[in-house]
Length: 280
Ligand code: ADP
Image (tube, rainbow, N blue to C red; front, side, top):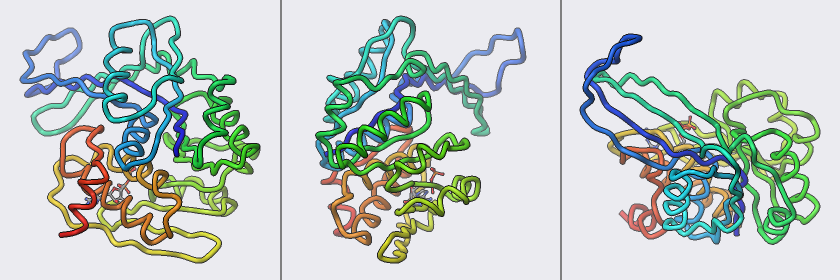
């Protein structure tokens, strides 16, 4: 089973032919709401990959809270450990123009209040794998990692958005999941973590661990939107951490590739969809 301690947002995506100038109003073409936040996206992918998955995070006291929690629950994620805090649920306001360029405003809201309490610690201790990102306060990330280490739960970190990592956190990590940019920015840290999984976009992924290096080629798909592919990959990887490295990477690559074939960040495939894709 997997525990994700991380962020959850309501995403609002509006499409307009051209961006408004300051003080100007333009008429848009479409609007859609979706669930975002790296924590929630990765939890959704882990659950859809077939792992019993608990999400630990925080939402506000607003209508958005119910929307994002219903969305996670319908993907099979256990949301009973999500805290309600005063103020707003995390929110991302995305505007896309006719050329595909975007403007994004992210309001962290409740994500800035995520804490690891006793209930969260118990969930972490019960799980096989803890999956972390960096969209919540660093002290919560460190507390979660420490609770996992004490209980023998595997600690995986997707260090995104990339930032310097304190030594006390690095020492608690069993593995990192990095894209090429994150690997470069954290080269010194990456060299000290037992398992390093590097995602290579359309080229797939590479895993380096105590037993050597495994390269898993990417899958050729008709790409619609790669947003969320990295999150789908991370969630699937955590869900399949018990499989041999080559098979773990193959399934995570398939989840990433399938996510890139659909619009939106929350498009992670189910285990059945991945099985059908791999059988072809
Ligand atoms: P990020 O989006 O976090 O920068 P990547 O671009 O490396 O991460 O993508 C994460 C994973 O998603 C890749 O390892 C791969 O499995 C899958 N993926 C991403 N882009 C493509 C693509 N164009 N074709 C096939 N798979 C892709």
